[in-house]
Length: 51
Image (cartoon, rainbow, N blue to C red; front, side):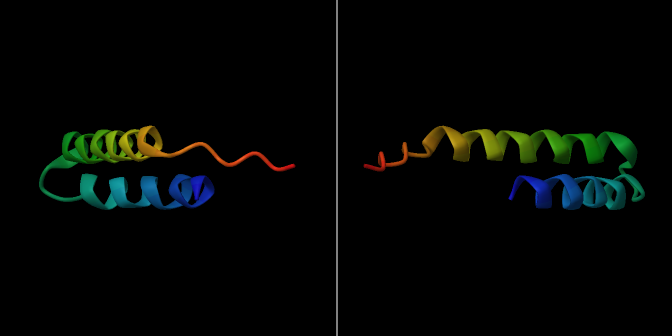
């Protein structure tokens, strides 16, 4: 999942930055995506230990 985000994220930000909002809008999108990822990671439960 991380590798896919590393590929797709900059592509999406580039498309957004090429639009009317410019790089600022692309960076805002990037920050919001990072926040969403952090919230999802925060809610993740620990894996059960393997015995």
